[in-house]
Image 1 (cartoon, one colour):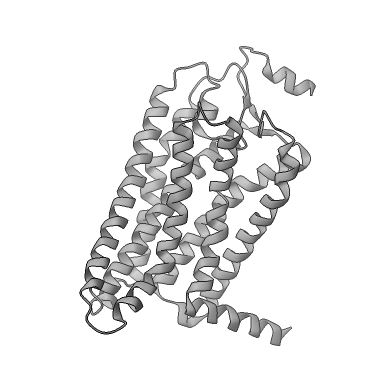
Image 2 (tube, one colour):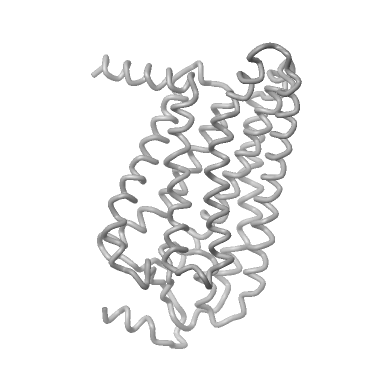
Amino acid sequence: MISFLKSNNYSTAPVSEFLLICFPNYQSWQHWLSLPLSLLFLLAMGANGILLITIRREASLHEPMYYLLSLLSLLDMVLCLTVIPKVLAIFWFDLRSISFSACFLQMFIMNSFLPMESCTFMVMAYDRYVAICHPLRYPSIITDQFVAKASVFIVARNALLSAPIPILSAQLHYCGKNVIENCICANLSVSRLSCDNFTLNRLYQFVAGWTLLGSDFILIFLSYTFILRAVLRFKAKGAAVKALSTCSSHFILILFFSTILLVVVLTNVARKRVPMDILILLNVLHHLIPPALNPIVYGVRTKEIKQGIQKLLHREMQEG
C-alpha cells in the first residue's frame, strides 16, 4: 500500500518501472474473474497445442492451408502468453509491477501480432479464393514455397510497421506517475503518464492500425465477394454447398476476430460513456477469446483435423 501511494506522487525522477492497476474502480472483480480467465487460458494453450501437434504428426495435414492454420495458432499462443500470465499474477499474487523494458516489449508484441493475425486471415482467404475460383491452378499457386513467403511477409510487414509505436512511447519522458490504469501495457494507457506531448505516438498508432487492419479486411471482403460470385454460378447439385462448407470455419474465425475487435474499437471511441473497467476487461478478453475459440472451431468443423486428433489420441493411448 505504501509503495502504491509513493508511486502516485509526482517527482522529477525517471520512471524505471510501472504499476498495472486492473479495474481501478472495482478491484474486487479480480477474484471472480481469475477463475474463468485461467480456464480460458488453459483452454487456449491446450487446444492450440493439440492442433499444432496434430498438424505436425499427421502427414495428411501437411498442406498449405493447415500450415497457415499452424501459423495462426502460434500467433494466438504468443499473444496469450504475453498478456494473460501477467494478468493472472496481478489477480492472484498482487504482482503489479512491470519493468520499463518488459512493458514496451509487451506493447510491441500486442501491436504487431494483432495485425499479423488479420494478415494471416487475409492469406487464408486468398487460399480459399484460389481453391474455389481457380481449382485447377490451386496446386501450382498455393505451394509450400508460397506459404513460406507469405509467412515472412506477415511477420516482416507487421513487425516493421508496428515497431515505431513502442519506440515512440519509450522515448517519451516519464517523470510523474507510474501507475497504469490497465491490466496491460496499452500504448495510450502508458503514453498518458509521460510529461511530453504524445500526439505523434497516438497519430501513428491510429494511421498504422487502420492501414494494416483495414487493408487486410478489404482484401478478405474482396476474396469472399469473388468466392460468392463463383459459387452462385455452380450448376451441379450440391456443388455450391460443398464449396461454401470449405470456407465456413475460416469465415467463423474472421467473424469472431472482427466482432470482438469492433466492440473494443467502438467502446474506446465512446470511452466517456463506457466505464473504464469495461474497456479494460474487453481489452483482456480480446487477447483471450479468439485464441481459445479458433482451434475449437477448426477442430469441430474440419473433418481432416478431427480425424487427425482422433488418430493422435488413439496412438497415444496405445503407446501408454
